[in-house]
Image (tube, rainbow, N blue to C red; front, side):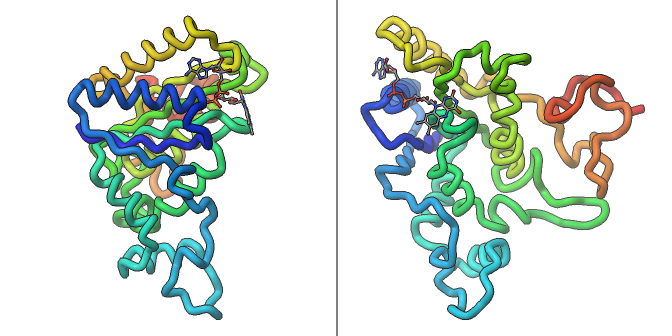
Length: 265
Ligand code: FAD
């Protein structure tokens, strides 16, 4: 398979750098082709702004979505953005790797998403009508491809458990896994999360490295998270609400969007 790993840590000699090297070595050992987007090494520009749209008239009001749609349609996006889009189209599997910073991805990676996920490429795809709300949440440009996160945290695993003070890790990662990966069509594999890493000693590192190698060996066979597909019948369209009766009665919030096998009323 072809794998794109987007790496968002400023220091190659960090734990994240070491885990990235472990992952890439294992992927190559398995015969996969790997490309890495090392955002800091590339000098990636984080913020989306007028400079991303060279064809925009200097006195025109800047509407990021409209400018993105026009530039994508006309081939007018900047070379750095086009190069990342080409890598995404090339890859069968996308891996986003980052340390958890303030409960989410570092700004440089969010900026990669903001700029690379153009209108017409990752959103605004497909027919939009009262009966069909575009190709998204399980459909779209990346349908048929897989994606996963590699994340390190300072906090303990218990602090990210169902009743943990930081909030459950599945909830914290939901906007990334469901909103950024599943939205444009990826099947999303469970994340690889390494907790409380400041305390990692050599033995702990060896253990985490082996756990990561195993995940890299099983990329093709791991069961994806069971996110409900927008156009699979579980949602009322155009209201975009889960049909009555779906989801356990006491389930609320993000967990509702995971298929639990319940039937509509
Ligand atoms: P490093 O600091 O590089 O390494 C961590 C430890 O791993 C080292 O001390 C060492 O023991 C070991 N190690 C490193 N390399 C190796 C190697 N090659 N072999 C063996 N052992 C090694 N944490 C949270 O939980 N929630 C947050 O919201 C959060 N917000 C943050 C916000 C900011 C701005 C920052 C800077 C940190 C935040 N943190 C948070 C902590 C952050 O998630 C961790 O610092 C990060 O995950 C550690 O990853 P690293 O690659 O930087 O590790």
